[in-house]
Image 1 (tube, rainbow, N blue to C red):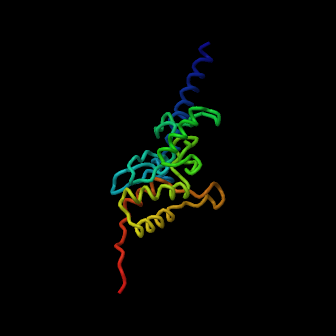
Image 2 (image 1 turned 120 degrees about the vertical axis):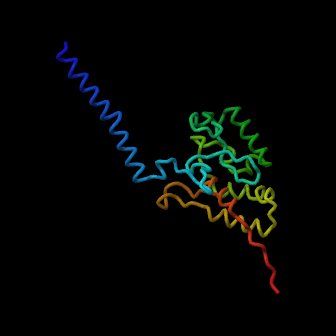
Image 3 (image 1 turned 135 degrees about the vertical axis):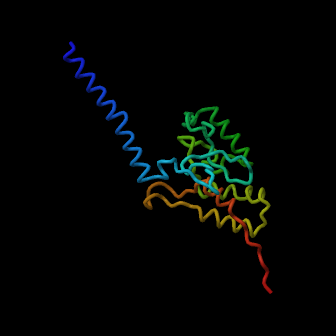
Length: 194
């Protein structure tokens, strides 16, 4: 029995060290060396302080900011996931009606991604249509006049990310990047000509 037990124990210890320690450390080290930003969570820093991840949505409740899609997990990363409700769910219909009421419109007039949570509950992107839908509210909350609102719309359009490789997915806007650009936005005072 000892003839089989000792070699098996040695093999267990060797594979534990190799597969459980050495390999994960090597892969982590390589990832941090080759893809430092991504391995660190794709964090966005403003003035040296992290404000969020480019890959995870977060809640923006202040009216001066654009809002991301609703989250079935309240933007928490550990219990993230979809709401798991089908089209016949009374709760889903109630949630959609409440979200549409928060946007001040009928369900048909609000872009779908502002009414429905994403599959992960953490999707950081919205469509250009959803961003433009929020533009009036954000402009009012920031006290923008007409020309400033037009300049802000240009800023929104500049934040559009094209589909990956030109054909995978759809054009989209990262809400965190948009809100950071909006914080840096200082409208130039409109000058009148002679």
